Length: 270
Image (cartoon, rainbow, N blue to C red; front, side, top):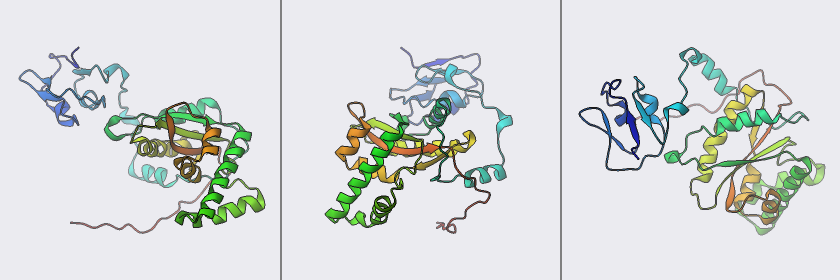
């Protein structure tokens, strides 16, 4: 079956589709775009999206599944700057569950994040059972205590966290967030963690639009990446899948009326 469908009446032979194709599947012939010898289309959809006359379709990335860009929705530099700077890592949450449709909206945006070679390869587990979340926190702290006892170089960063949990009972791992989102990827998928980073970056930026707050569950991730069996048993992932990332989600308890600064920009020009 041919990969490309070209409407020759609409094609203006501009060559954009061939230029943007990352794997050079598309070449330009006398009549317009043609398939090259390398049949390695990664279904990125770039060729269809860039066509100015809607002359091209790709069976792996159909035109019917693409959305027309609405130029009226473009934002300016000032709006974009404030939007990006307003993102906060939220560690204080309201005692309120997030509606399932909002969580679905959040993860539907996360799945659109870029991935290496358009590999994607992620699925998500959402845990909302508060008793289960408390067990997950306790299991992660137990792992930290083992690491401290083993003399692991990273363990110095766990001491204060473990002490706070044991002395106060505070949830220092998941911060009492009502939901934990676990990104899952095949155990054999080398880019799983990398793609989860991209995915959760999109989720973190989109969350405030939905009135939500997020924060990376970094300690839990490290515990899972070390294959700590008590934690893996609690997560109970489907066979063949592994943790690729973890994110807390909930309604923020507080708002932030000011923008936080960062270290000065450092650039080397050559």
